[in-house]
Length: 467
Image (cartoon, rainbow, N blue to C red):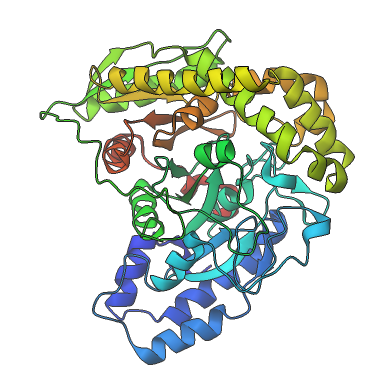
């Protein structure tokens, strides 16, 4: 195995700038790694035909003086965003030929920064699940244990970057689809603040509906927090096609030298698994070792936030995309969607307006909460990674799975930045936590996460696929 694929994104870019290695050599090393690793994962849906030619052209042109943090770095992008010349399938057989000549902002930013896109990664049907399988591209697997979900909907992105296919993976997050795959695959990510990364699909017939748009974000997955930071810097460049993009440097909240981290091991009515408690304890101890003050803390209305996320999202889904899913989705995804919908309230018009108002009130409560603490440590999920395709195999467990994923939904409802990092391996599976910060304090959240990572270490080197 080439040592190149073990380099971080930052190390890769440094070696290229120092001319220790060419962009072509780096690209070929990652494509060779893809050839070796992907058969065990089925994470990649499309190879990018022009990757080697692009790398060769970059070598011939020479390294620009203002080369970005990802110049020459191999990356992957998820198959549910537009990329010129490649289909945005969203895991749907009927969409297998839906190509166009436009790039989504996140793809355009990666390209203009000199990152080399080498592959597209898989997603579940309509990107609506915590496993990553569909009738078009098949099922993606977890490199730690193929019987366990790699997460969803960016499970293939997390599995690929954990296994050395690219140094940065793009994903997106409407209900945990960045953080949960990172949790399942033992890597790091950030669900950025609402509006941090511009989002739209230029080849789509219509824009996404407003509730989905306001709770979904694009973001990077990587093997270290430093690489997540580099990915976010590049992905969040301005794009005027998203009129709601906001690139505020910080929340503006004043801070002294001492950071206070609230510890919320289980602010929900549901039980939390012992393994998750262990992850929280390890992260809390890491924070203390890093000189961060920790306090036990209960955030406001956590269960209500999680429920409201589902009420709003699935009411919108019922009125905007339910018929599309019924027409083009498999029997399994339609049955699963029914399970989701039955767990939440279908809001009428007055209830919808009341719920949107309540969302703002909850956002205000959490904003005021961050006057007491600087950030909040929570579980990513209340249970360890579960059996792959469990929602399809045992639909009766869907309500339990939804309750277990409550920590994910809270953050999407509120639009806050959240960094997911691994803590340890237990029973052969990675565990982790998420660190939630005030709106627009993405960089601050990464600062804290990096301090915790220094104490906790990273997990990917111990994956069997690296042996």
